[in-house]
Image (cartoon, rainbow, N blue to C red):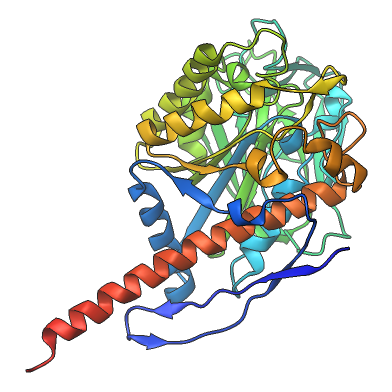
Length: 424
């Protein structure tokens, strides 16, 4: 039997000491095998980075100022952009005026793999695609993927899905690409849309400003020098100058922690996108082995966190514990329990938050129950659309609970200060 759980949040204005409330219900389907009490952010060390993040939400909600950039780094769960799209939508609609744009996209059709449903791509010319899960020596950035061409007449196009419930029309773009002396430049096919363009060779990107908001864009290559003979694309962000939240989904099918630690331009491109909150949702592929090494897993995880903090030491990081899954489709994977222990240790040592998806699912062998309920695919690794949407809603609920606690604590501080100032 399915019931409904409703989460309510009350926002408190700290500046005027006036309490205003508005119900923002989020209905979540109830299943008796899911541990809803565990659906929260755990903090086992220094949580000051999240106070800073929540202060930015305060400024955005109460004063209508600022953009909050969220980034989810993962594997196939993230490349599909179902969980992350659900979370993006919730973050952008739980309070008015929160939609700051779609964020990162890539023409995945170039490598004949699944593309997120909320946009589609077209391309011309011959492109060679390289991913961080391959044993190659190609140059890779934050996004873990690159597409290279030597065809000067090549082009690519991004079109937003007109059926999207949330509209992501954009008026600026960042293109992460090779900018050395041998690389072609890039330009809009329709130059009547161009308001301004600037390439930053030292940071490896071009930023283009448009005359209006659009829902599709097409790019061409341009040869500016005699020796230019190639172009390497690492990704695109569809941006706006609106206040609000955007979420960049960075995910490659089959990726593990080790996949991102070998990306040479990771730090440079992370600095360009400059996220306020990073959700690390990797680990299933790291533990998909009969010879799991917890120390190696911890070392790889710490290396990724170190790369992130070398760019922004104050960024808020949430570590998502991998889901319960089957190993080689035959038996429940016992390695995930070891991953829980490692992530808890890192949370305490690195000041990261934790969302324990493994415990929330119901723990060891809970994936069979999710499968029988139509929430997981037959491989008992990936989720169905319904499962991803449920998880996206539950992650958002955990955020609401954590943010609501921040508001409550700040309100108590205001009341204490008021009492100190009251005459006796």
